[in-house]
Image 1 (cartoon, rainbow, N blue to C red):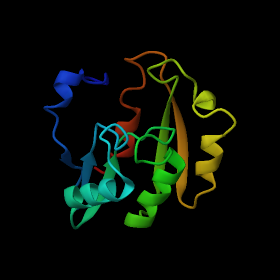
Image 2: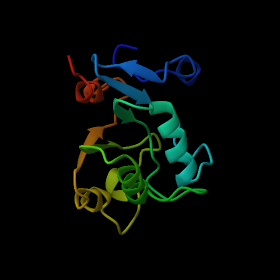
Image 3: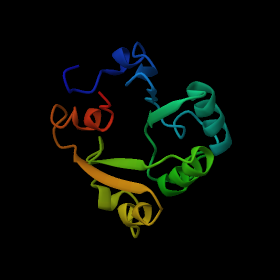
Length: 146
């Protein structure tokens, strides 16, 4: 992979859980609950079932807009925070996304970064998505606990 996103055929073979240190693990989810047709309750229950006890980090995609039974990214992050009470939440926007839409155009008339930043303990970052092979390891640094 070397900093490049895996092809969809390779994604199925990636483990969901990674040990980051003796005390902390990462649950990596590659499909959004929006795409998986989950409700907020189903998403929380599934995530809680995967993580179990101990110290955890979570990385997974959310859709900017409400879709199927899941709310938009702001409400989804809020629900995650209510359920898990994390020390902090970092939301990384890929801009432009795979459809070449810039972050300020995800939901016209709304500033998602500002809305998320108003939530306590939430930080946002925007990753340059213009080139598939660039910035691929940026998120890995968030989870370096060695």
